[in-house]
Length: 178
Image 1 (cartoon, one colour):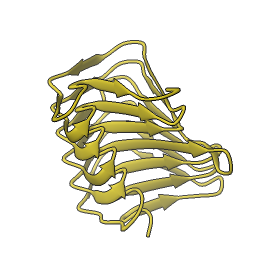
Image 2 (cartoon, one colour; image 1 turned 60 degrees about the vertical axis):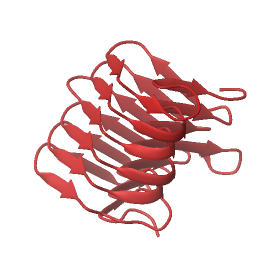
Image 3 (spheres, one colour; image 1 turned 180 degrees about the vertical axis):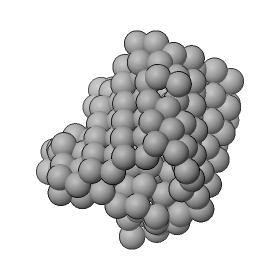
Image 4 (spheres, one colour; image 1 turned 45 degrees about the horizontal axis):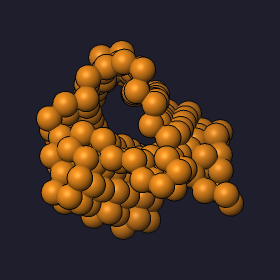
């Protein structure tokens, strides 16, 4: 299953300016919020917390035209058994590239995953313009951030700190063509 609490698909649009999305569970992608091809999730405030999924414990952006924009609020305590405890951008040749943007006063804090405790770009496109990403924990690679399979993470501003990885890359780990 995808999007334990919210699924935004096929040119759908969701705006979150306040409130709380909490405790969502998905067996596959986006424990709290799943954004699929053509969908947009725009978070300017509020809290997304305690989501659980295989990938993208709290928020996942998957495939062509899928966009998650986090410019305010708090994304925290997401857990992914594989990649991207809090946030996850995914792309591949058959599904296209999902995009995820972090800016403004956004806080991405205390995510846990095997790879990319707070966030992962697996063939996707992640851009960090501002905000804070901190206290991510990975049981393998990239305590805060992890990129693989041509996934990109561009950091143009903001603060990435205090990540912890058991194997390598406390704050950032990039593998392969990433």
